Image (tube, rainbow, N blue to C red; front, side, top):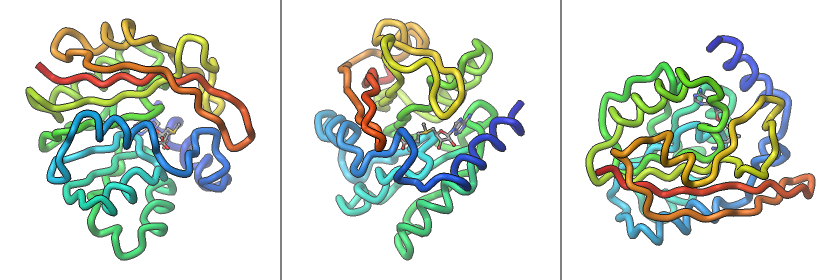
Length: 205
Ligand SMILES: C[S@@+](CC[C@H](N)C(=O)[O-])C[C@H]1O[C@@H](n2cnc3c(N)ncnc32)[C@H](O)[C@@H]1O
């Protein structure tokens, strides 16, 4: 199962330009806005789960953030990001892993996931994700998760997704995570399509 998933994502990043995939955004505006609103300091430890080739870490390095980790199942995705960052790549901890098989060895102040949780269509995958989330965060940690909204696409990158509104996502995470903010975003794909996203910001109790 994990091998098939990894092969799928490896193939995506090997065959498509990073700025042509549907989830590409020139700058990760919604994530940066959420970080600003939550007033997180640049010293906070952040992990971008399923960060792929996202430029979120580039933006945070520019803003002086110093404790950054990116985890992804696809090595070619991390290679794209490392190449883009050049010398700054050493400022980031890169983890090649399937989040549902991963046991964090430390805790993060901020867990960021844009368009990864929604691929977990089986309850046991979501349970495994939640175990990683619970191990990788502490009381007070902020968790930002963006998924396709209920009226969003049924598939992403050729894979089926589970769509959420804020209530449904909060129910998935359980009572240990308090929903602090939620909003919808219309993401414009490089092809000009519109994808409704649901963003949620939780704080661990
Ligand atoms: C739709 S892309 C979003 C990438 C990035 N978060 C962004 O916003 O640009 C989904 C990403 O999740 C990664 N991914 C999918 N399933 C994963 C899993 N089980 N564990 C870790 N990464 C995963 C993919 O390789 C891909 O980079």
